[in-house]
Image 1 (tube, rainbow, N blue to C red):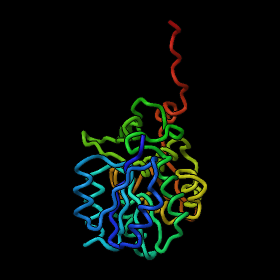
Image 2 (cartoon, helix red, strand yellow; image 1 turned 180 degrees about the vertical axis):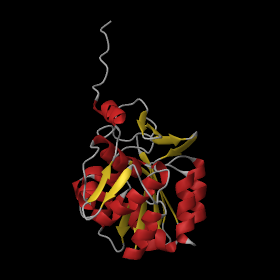
Image 3 (cartoon, helix red, strand yellow; image 1 turned 90 degrees about the vertical axis):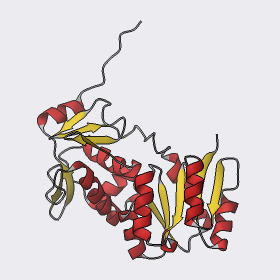
Length: 247
């Protein structure tokens, strides 16, 4: 089954690159010259990957934030500077690719994103047990990538969940930003320490009661970050899965 990719790219040159590289049976590609056309295309059906030229968005951060709130699909942002990278990741992009880019690098990046699975089906390799887990006053629902506190439920994006789940699997251990990026998203992201810092901030906004004074994901001064669990939550994570009786 082909995977659907929807892209917004005003440049005719880059649109042709996207079309040529992804023009095979593995992908169903829609490349649009305007952002409104991209939105209309998404209304016609869900996508497995969204690509946006961040620098060409009107009111870029606000537009991308609205898109992020509307969909739970991985978003790859084309950027042209370090400031654009920070702004795109801060406002909802899951991945960034600087322009100009090598066509083969672009193709590999798309393949890597799609290998992680559709937005609603995160990889299970880092997931905690399927039952809700209590982390202080927070309820964590791994099967839905959601957290709940005081009746208010928040959903984590796939990239946010990979980072949070990685910390959940190794509570109490301190990770540098480099180690956190590599552990959450793969060895190829070890150099993205800045991206790890941004996503820690994004996850905190969803899991902490007071993100300015975090008690779940702590900052270890000069070392990195660690996740704090009480004894009951730690036991829930370490418990083996139940054994089903043979019928």
